[in-house]
Length: 439
Image (tube, rainbow, N blue to C red; front, side):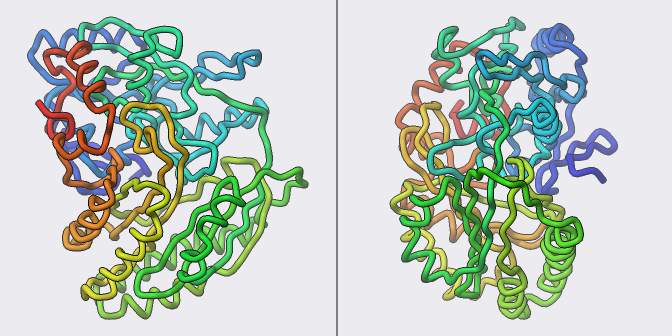
């Protein structure tokens, strides 16, 4: 099966295997006109409409029993404006293709998430992010958007055109319309030097503010049941280019990080008692390394081990306290957690429902290998995250509803009022959207 989600016998499944749907029909429009026709037809037939990318969300944000729009024919670059330093790209374009095409043009996005399998519209609509001291999520790099609204009209928005729609639709959860094209800010391609090294949990906890302040992009992974982390610092570099040698890259990124890690997950699933020992070995398997390459080759990595994930954004100043509570909970609980916990940061932005909206944020992500019971771990973690006014990632497992979210998003009412205006009959609603935005 490909890295994307799959559809068999009319059933759509997401990448993580924890969400499925049986749409009444699937439509793969080859143009914006075909998409608007499909939206109008769905409304006439009394069917709801959702667009789905590669299914990398762990929530049912894209699931529908109505019309499922597959945007894989709406791909490619529409326009590169070198004066404005922007690129306009069709909504169904995979990030991987965008990154490679931009590199050929000597251009790059400023920041990225850690995988690039998703479509540009799927990634931005759910708030996909990497880590950055000054640079935010992929959606924070959007300069313009085109979307088909519930009445079948095509709406363009930017800071100058329909600015109130632009403020919300960059992370629109698929609730305001179907995105057809996105204009991103780009810059001349640059080099990043990545420095990866193991570090003790106590040292990262003690020096976190310093590590964050001294690096353009800092992140770390803590291995539960151990006092060990693996840190990654990415900073701009004058060069020269010094990529990871091919054989070493295959050994570390494919054999260790995917192959051996997958076997360790299988062993852990079969014999949970072995997980703490496996975690200690895993945390020591990855050695320090430094390399210099173009951005997408540094920011992103292959992720072949399938998992289910929960991630929350907490105020950046509260992240270490939150993480210490998580560590204490795991140590005392008898839970067996075989997947590292990932910690990243983002600066405050001005997007209505961004997890970093109006506050400097840090993200804590917990994972369980696909097929393992994750509810006990995620429930206990969520209790800790919500005590710090955590905001759940829109594309990852959580149990929050509109009442909770209205309390942690100061501009929540602004988003729901805009939705009332753009989609009064709730054409783009599904169970997930109803839960998080209210009916």
